[in-house]
Amino acid sequence: MHRRSLVFLALGWLLLVAMDAGAFSAASPEEVGLSTERLARIGQALTQQIEARSFPGAVALVMRKGRVAYFETCGQLEPQTGAPMTKDAIFRLYSMTKPFTSVAALMLVEDGRLRLMDPIGLYLPQLAKLEVAMPSTDANGKPTYTLVAAERPVTLYDLLRHTSGIVYAGFTRTEYIKELYTKAHVGWEGVTPAEQLDALAKVPLARQPGTMWEYGLSTDVMGRVIEAVTGMSLGQFLDERVFRPLQMPDTTFHVPADKVKRLAQPLATDRATGKPIALHDVTVAPKNDAGGAGAASTAMDYARFLSMLAQGGQLDGQRLLSRTTVRHMTTDHLGDIKPATPQLAQGYGFGLGFAIRRADGLNGTVGSAGEYTWGGAGGTAFWVDPKEQLIAILLTQAQPGPWQREFRELFRQLVYQAIVD
Image: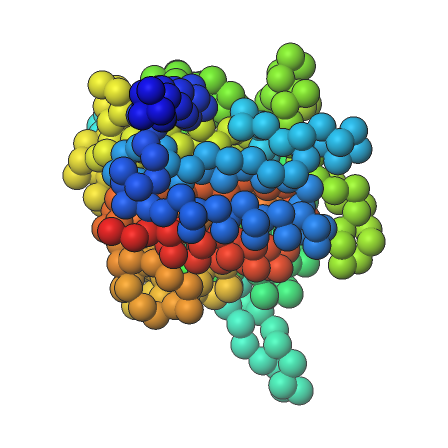
């Protein structure tokens, strides 16, 4: 009788996890080579981060060998009301939007409607003849800049791998470019697609196309290309071709009123400066669907998207991309091209939408060669490790800043230490 009770308890546990895991098959950690005891360290560490006021709450999800083995919450969804974090909480993704736009672009490549080596001016005439700000020094040794014609056009390939010379004003280290971007109001929030393109047409590139990796608005511009080709807004195209086929009902650029109560919120103030934390407002319809930063989603929705990539472009009978295209996306495309800004970690190159780990070593954090990964400024991160058959997602809402590496790296090391096979 005791043995039968244990069996029923085990079946009940698997049923509960399966319900949490949506359409995915659930597994006990040990079934997929993970340790329950070691995975428990993740929740303990995240709770300590909450106590340190890094963020109010988090959702963590770990899949291995195609099955959900860890899906837990901690802390609060809404710190002002004390509402607890939920597994269906919706998070502002910021730059974890970029892989959606990259997949959409590659789908159009597979449709024969785009070529990666096409110049962007073919689709966005405003950006056909961009100049480049070339640095030099004056007679007094002070930096000065001369505008020259680009040696070659910016291509769609440049946009996807961030070698276009189009930057973020807040990230670039070139003060001259930063000033020009600020003066021309170049950005992604609060502007229409036409206004964004007009502003970009007024400023020079930070460097010659294809010469350096610099993080920036390239993926936003790729979104504008998708809109020009399809005649649809980026959000409409993604909903029709990506989100609905993959059964991602909570992924959107505009969280509707009936789902706002599930939107995770940050702390009121930054722990370091005491200043108010203000994240992107996804409850108001955006003026443009920012392909580099504007989407919101849940852990389960994002897990379905990553599972599609991990399974070679298909999930549950829905094929979005070919296996060969996914391999192309998840391969390093930088080679000897150097990064100009620190968003690309040591030992990582960049594919067509995310960073690619070049070797098992080369970085102080654990990982495997061929892993692809990225995160968002609002406190989100993911990686897919094909070698370990691993998908990991951490969603929080936190003050943007490089200090977030602390809890992201902590989560990473605790996921890997739980592998025991």
